[in-house]
Length: 377
Image 1 (cartoon, rainbow, N blue to C red):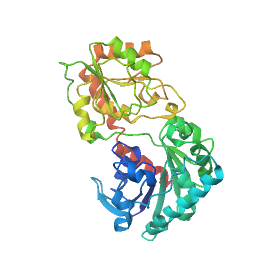
Image 2: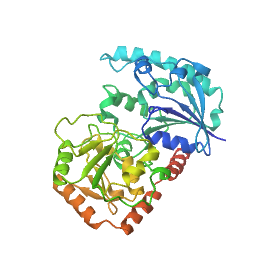
Image 3: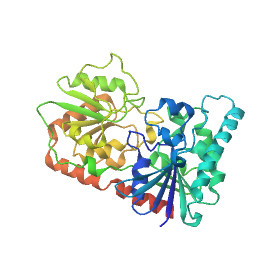
């Protein structure tokens, strides 16, 4: 059995849905999968609730075996690393990262003692800074960079992400991206790029539940963060005063008093409970701003909405041509509101069935097969 090692930025224990974890989990059905977890810092150890503190202290050598629905995954945690993004000086940042690479290097060597390099591949999941500094430890094992956001525009990437992504690209064998926008970017700077778009967990979202009409609801699923057009959300709320607008997901920005009281924040919910909420929404919304960051997003939530059979109205924040026959894409607030009105009037069982059929073609199982084919070429 061939081996996949994922050197990940997303943390295994993150409570949020991540494309990396969805793909890697399904690869365990056909491959031995080893997951080199997010490089937790000393600060993370104390401040992050879901940090695996026992493993970060070195319990069982920092290794644990997790049984998933698709197969076992071996998870490795290094000892905590030194925080580095605070540094403004290139020489100091480099010194810290070289020290951090040695910390991770011990764990990488431990992993490599258990594999056959000839039948192993490494996927670096959106972790180019650590990828650059640890590249030498992987030797001649083929290395794929998996990019699912525009790093240069990501608020959390700090001052170092963009430059190190460029450096890291010179060391990798191939790149896999998650959107058309990222495909356009990377094909200009790397000779071997494939696009595998995000999928949907059909087990949790595929449903035939009819909308519950006794309470009128619209909804948004996902992080309420800097991507959200607050003015648009307010205009929608004012245009539909008799509808509750539910937001399910972490609230990372505070709208203050700018939104009416019928915009309700429910917080994050377990994935297996989401269909219950979506079934009550008459229309699902994606009120994203149009920015350099959102331009390259292929949002997970579109296929989740469609798997639930729900109408979708979104802004034109990115290339959404894959969905043009199945959702409504609005260029301004007026057309966004008109789109909601039309979906409220025109939704029916036939349309719901077509949405679910569309989502089935975009399952994570399909995406995983595409990803494995891309890295095998």
